[in-house]
Length: 177
Image (tube, rainbow, N blue to C red; front, top):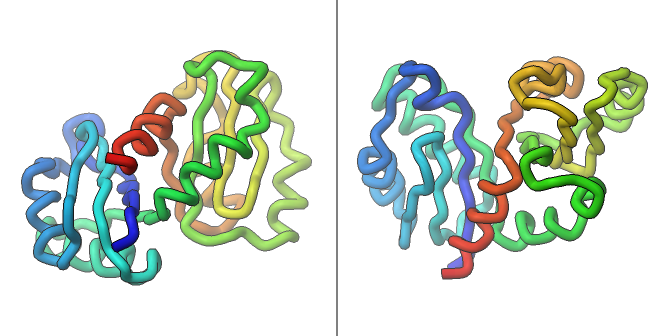
């Protein structure tokens, strides 16, 4: 079975859209996912499944909506896809880990939208889009940056969620266990 990582957007943030990790794990097991493991309360899952990522996303989104009565965007990547991100991060060698983030996009943006967004000035912060990943460098605090999930969703017309680089690295580590 293939090792996968699911990243959920907007749960357990600021006391809203509460989802217990034990409950989330149970839901995933009901979907037939195996070796399900959660990591921190913000909606990170590591599991095994041979289903395509898009099918897994749809299944969990539907189950979450049915169970909790609110929509939770879900983005699923293979463990290998996440490992490749480490190699592709253009900011990795010139930054500290605290300055790095990865924004996961649900769909690959159109070349037209990528071309338009590249002209956006966000100094001193920077970003680089690679397929369904946006590598983000924040000179200051992430919550002060203009490079938010909402920014990327509006400019690229796809759902997005962001994790700090430390979490990305940990998810890769956990996927190897």
